[in-house]
Length: 312
Image 1 (cartoon, one colour):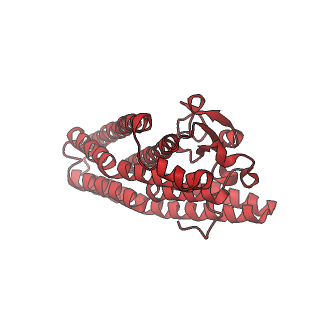
Image 2 (image 1 turned 90 degrees about the horizontal axis):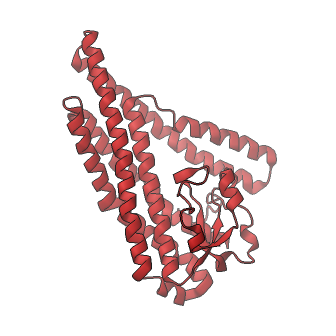
Image 3 (image 1 turned 90 degrees about the vertical axis):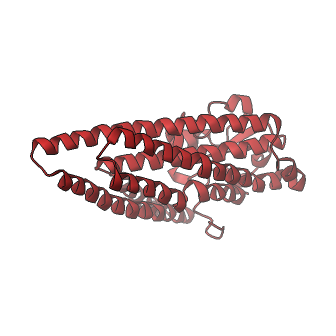
């Protein structure tokens, strides 16, 4: 039955870690860097914020809703068959209001994250311009150096992210063997890959990392809430926490694995709400208790990389 959890996670990952989303954000940032940032940093960073928020509101959060609702189907099908799937197919009433309200709060949160990042980059770039003027460095040369450094770092960051993805899969394979030595080595390699993926030094690189992270978290939370709204529409009100990411799941999520509570009791303590060690990046699932009851196959945290036969 763990394969149904993996199927749900992978449906959501298609949008929350999608290449399109990352590329769209990078394109906006690149255009921002090349054209206007150094002329009027304050005005242009405000424009950047509007473009990024519009991208999330119009394109990626609607995709996240669709992905999250589709990810509920394998679970509903397992516990209630076609009747449960049909009942959850169209949101109305409280589930619809719940998801709509969360969407507005999610957009507001993402906008604030972008605001924090753009204010920081604006201040830092103005300081760099002042330093170049003080040191008699040609403005054009300084701008060229900043852009070149950012592009070089972005290239390395993309490579590091690919390495991290492979490290996650290697850890899953090691877990499947049960070889403790192999698992220890794979964990070490994953930790190293994760550090490299987050090792950024340029001002633009830091902003890109923060904005990408905020975008992924916003989409992840949206998919989770859309999935939960679908369960609610189908009539399920008590949920069990299923930790995801195998041995790499954080201590908080591992401790919560298998915990069952009413929806009211989970309110404010759902995956991605920030109360676990992994914070807003939580990948865990809340599923109807009917799915996990007496199920031996998900006694331990589920690793979505283990099931290579499933469509990614």
